Each structure stands twice: as C-alpha cells, then as structure tokens.
Image (cartoon, rainbow, N blue to C red; front, top):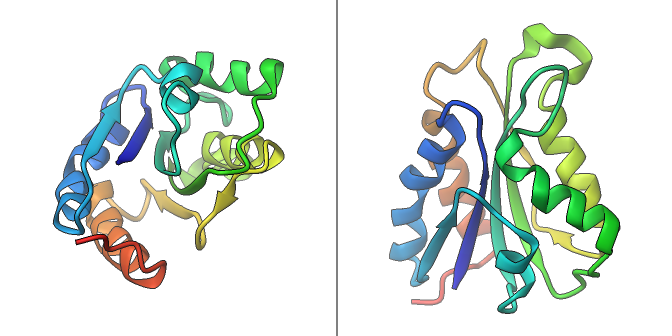
Amino acid sequence: MLKIFVGTMYGGALDVAEQVKPLFEEAGYEVAIFDQPTLDDLIGTPTDLALFCVSTTGSGDLPGNIMPLASDLESKSPGLGGLRYGLIALGDSSYGDTFCGAGRQLDELLEGQGAQRLGERLEVDAMETFMADDEALPWVEQWIDAQQLKVA
C-alpha cells in the first residue's frame, strides 16, 4: 500500500497526486490519496511508503488542509522510524526565499521524526512549469526505478 498525502490550496497538488497514482498502480501498489490528511491516516495503519505532494501558500506556509497533520507531527512526536517517503513540493520562485517553503518544512518535520526520504525532493517551480505533472510524472517514474520500488 502506498499512501499519497496532499497539501493543496487550489487543487494543483491533488491533481499531481491523481496523475501519478497510475504509475504506482503499474508498479504493483494499491494507492490511497488523502486530501484531508491526519496523523491517524499516517500511523493508524502502519505506513511504510508514502508520497507527499505539497504546494506552498503565502510566505512559505503549509496549505490549511495539511496543517492538522503537520501540527500533530510537531506536538505528538509519533516517531516515524519505519516510514520511507518521497516529496514533491510545488512553489513559485518569484517568492524568493520562501520558494517551496511548505515542502521543505514538511521534509524537516518528517526527518525529525526519523522518517527516511528516498532520493531528492522534487521542487516544481510554477514560473518554469505551467503544469506541475509535466515534471512530476517523469520524476515519479525515475523515483520508482531508482529506489527499486516495483512490487509487481
């Protein structure tokens, strides 16, 4: 089972999640997308592999729909030693220092809980890429390959 956790304001990150889902299904996974993710979604049933698709709002802030998960990670410190994850951060480089701030913040939170990020974080710049899935799809294909995640 692969869980995709989405942090989105206007649906862009959810669109990316829905676009990459079939790639994981082809690799042999059952895939669940959480667009109102909670800590229980992450640890209620053990999650060993997850993908986070997060857009950045305001000045590098997490979107409201993923805030409950992020604040529970901080306040409850569940410890995520068994979790391996990938992260796709959506941002806009015209915001300077806060570019992909939400993705970077979530990445730090997860690592702080002992989770292991597989490979590099993908940062998609809205200034360069109109459709985020144009960058996300090849990245996910390469990620599945490079991390030898095929189960089929």
